[in-house]
Length: 300
Image 1 (cartoon, rainbow, N blue to C red):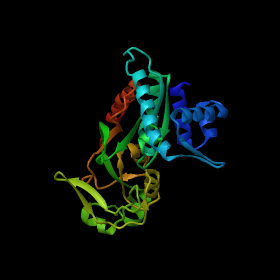
Image 2: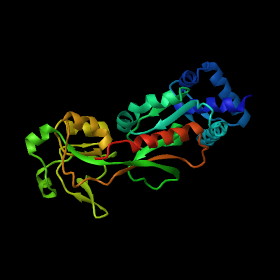
Image 3: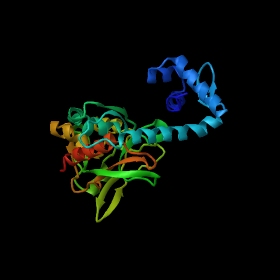
Image 4: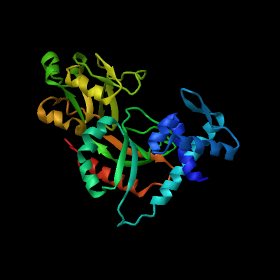
C-alpha cells in the first residue's frame, strides 16, 4: 500500500464528501478511491468514514485523523519544493484565498506577467469575502486586508493601500456633495460588514493617530465587496474602498472622491499561513511578486 497516495485519496473524499467527486478531482477511478480508503481503514483498524447513498462523512476517528493527515501531506509537499535552486523553474499549483474584488482589481490584471515568468505554475483561487479555515479548505495561504485579529497563523505583511471616500454622480444630484464632517448628518453611507450582526459604525476617518467614527444614516448594509461597490454606483451612499479598487470608476467619472481630508487609515495587506507548514518556493516567490504589485497601486 502506497500510504502517501492512500492518504491523498482519503483527504479528497473527506473534503468533497463523495467518492465520485474525489475521483473526478484526482482523475482516479472511483473504485480505486474506495479500495484505497478501505485498505487505510483496515491498516488503522478503525472506520474513518460513514458511507450512505447520499453522502460520505467523517466518523469521530476520521475527524481526528483528517487534520493530522492533511498537515503531514502539506509538510511533505513543502519538503519536496523548498530545496529548488534559485535558477530552477517553478512549477506546481498555488492554492490561494483572497477577497474576490482584491483579486479582480489588483491581482488578475497582472497575472499574465506572473505566468510569463513561471508558465509551469497554476493558481487555484478561493475568492471568499469571509474568513475560512485554511487547513480545512487546503489552501497554501490566505490574503487578508485590514487589521488582523489574534491568530495562531503566521502573518507576512505585503504592503498598504490608500483608502478613498467615494460617491456616484447620481448620489450628488440627489443629496449634494458632502464637504465637511458636519455635513454628514445630511448624508448616507453604505454599511459594510462581513457579518450582518456586526454594529453599524458610520463614517470612518483617521486623524491625530486615531480612528474616529461619525454616526451616519444608511439605506443598506452589505456583506460582500461587490455589493458594497454596486450600492454606491447606484446612488445609495458613500463608500470607503482602496484606491486600486475604484481607480477605473474614478477615471471614467462613475465615482467621485469626496472628503479627501478625512480618509480612513491606509489598509494593510498580509498573507497568512499556518506556522507548521513548510512554505513551497513557488508560494514565497508569489508573495514577493504580489508585494511588488501592491507597491505599484495608486496613492492619491
